Structures are given as structure tokens and as C-alpha cells.
Length: 353
Ligand SMILES: NC(=O)c1ccc[n+]([C@@H]2O[C@H](COP(=O)([O-])OP(=O)(O)OC[C@H]3O[C@@H](n4cnc5c(N)ncnc54)[C@H](O)[C@@H]3O)[C@@H](O)[C@H]2O)c1
Image 1 (tube, rainbow, N blue to C red):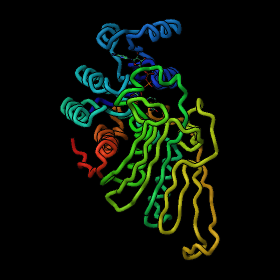
Image 2: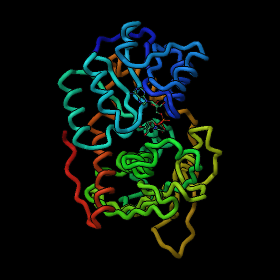
Image 3: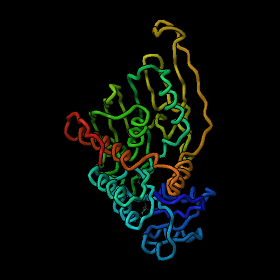
Image 4: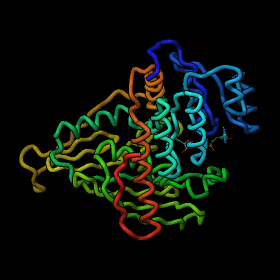
């Protein structure tokens, strides 16, 4: 573990695209961090970074020749995460790696082993876990108020515009709504409901005919017996996704709708509304259900994640989403892809690297 220190942390951001730009804004806005470097070889990133008078470098070694960051945020395309994280680990720099940890579980397991062996912390960017809505949902589930959790459903139904697909890697295997979007929902379901035992999935690319799917339907069985469904489409004009309902990212106009429903023997919970449904007496479908809305103070989970990354760099906290957690979530998504490919139910390997 690094030594405890409360100095401002110098953070480099590698990959200044869609999410990298939000990380750069976050690092600039957070009093505990300064921006050490923007690392991205593209002309667009160089021009935008220089136009904002920020330090730009084409590679990590070039940035290191100028100054050494205390931590690095890796926001490059999925297939580059492992190579970039291994580079950071070789220099002993703690890394916040955007999700998915890798685009193959084998590579992710190698990365987790390398980070462990070097004693360099890595944190995986499943940032929704920091959202106070999810914290409260977890508290409600753990309180036992819903009884035994039997069933859950989650939807990622959203309409990505044609422009989104101008970037080539987003049309190719390794991208697609299962790897890019549903992985967040899978991670939250693992966080809220427990470890996944098996998955069965179907995919379709009927809307756009790209190599990657645009639509998927997934059945999940959890080790504790809970059954769940997750459905995803990035071509469906609908308000039912975390992105559209949670209000955590201001680029998405918020809809007061639900994207996750969790049902237990004594109650049900709708998320992100945090609407809790119960009977006054013994559960009975002939009696009226009453609903209570639990309120939380909203907070930006990306900023909370960044503060947690500072704590991890300082050695005050163990990563909330460790490499092992990122790997376990990736294994579920790989299981989904394998099931859709083979038509078989996939029993998941236990997630030890
Ligand atoms: N946490 C979230 O909610 C969230 C949201 C969007 C994307 N992501 C993840 O973030 C990653 C990036 O996604 P995006 O949509 O921002 O992609 P993007 O294509 O918009 O940006 C990627 C950037 O990486 C740069 N890059 C490519 N090769 C590089 C290299 N060798 N060194 C440094 N930079 C390099 C590209 O020039 C580009 O600017 C993906 O893994 C994606 O899954 C996470």
C-alpha cells in the first residue's frame, strides 16, 4: 500500500474521448486533484487539449518525462485497457480503469495478477456503485424489508443516434450494448443481488445490421436462488434505462421512470425512483399495496469515484470495485455473449484470477 498523504493528487487522463473528457472536467473541478497530463495521440485530442491550455502528451513515457502523476485514469477503447493498465503498473502508478476491465477475461485475470504482484492498486470504473441511489437500494435490500429476494428485472432500452457509430470500434466485436451498457447493469445486479451462477441469452442485430448486437435478452440465475432478466437495446426509443432515469449524467434528459424492479416475499423496490411497495398486513394480492418513496440527496457518482480513487492512491481505502470485481462482472458479460453465440446456458466459473 502507498504511504498515507493528503497532498493534492496529480492525475493523468489517458484517452480524451467521450468519457475521458468528463474525467478531465472532474479532475479540474475536484479540489483534491490537479490535472497532470492528457495522454491521447489523436490530433483532435491534441488540438482540444492545447486549446484549453492543458498539458498534452502522445504517450505515458512522454508525460513521465515532464512529471510523474500520482494516479492515472485509463479511458481508452476497451481493447487497449489491459496494455495501458500494465504500462501504468510497470511505472508503479495506481490506475482507475474504465469498464470493462478488459475485453477478455483471460487478459483481465493476467492484469489482476500483475497488479497484485506489483502491489499497485487498480480500481475499475463501475461508477454507478457510488451513486447514493444505489447505496440506499443496497441498504433497503440488506435490511430484510423485502423479505427473500426472488426476482428482478433490469432494462437498458435507449436510442443511440447514427453519429455515435461513426467511431469504428463501436461497431465491432468487443463493443455493443452488452459490453458497453449492460455491463453496468450486470455490475449493479451483482452488487445488489449477489454472485451470478448461470446465464442464458439471445441477441439480435436486426436494427442496424452491424457486427455487434443492437438488442439482447438475458436470463440470470444467482447463487442464492434469485432469478432475473436483463434486456438491452441501443436502438429502442424508450425512457427505461439507468442513463435516462437516474439523472446522474446531465447529457441525458431525465425521465421519472423505473429501470430496475426487485421483488421479494414481503415487498418490491423500483429503482432509481426508490419506490418501495408493501402490504399493510400479510402479503395478499387481493389487498391494496401501499407505496413509499425513499429520498436520497443526489450526488455525481463520477466525482465520488474520483474522491475514492484519491483515497486509494493515499492508501486510506481498498478499491471499492477491485480488479477481481471488474473481472467477475466481465465474466458474466462473456457468459452472455457465449450463450447468445451457442444457444446454451452458461454456468459461470468462480471469479478468482
Ligand atoms: N463509465 C461510463 O459510464 C463510461 C461511459 C462511456 C465510455 N466508457 C468506457 O470508456 C472507454 C472509452 O470510451 P469512449 O466512448 O470515451 O471512447 P472514445 O472513442 O470516445 O474515446 C477513446 C479515446 O482514446 C484515445 N486513444 C486511442 N488510442 C490511444 C492510445 N494508445 N493512448 C491514448 N489514447 C488513445 C482515442 O483517440 C479517443 O480520444 C471505453 O472503455 C468505454 O467502455 C465508460
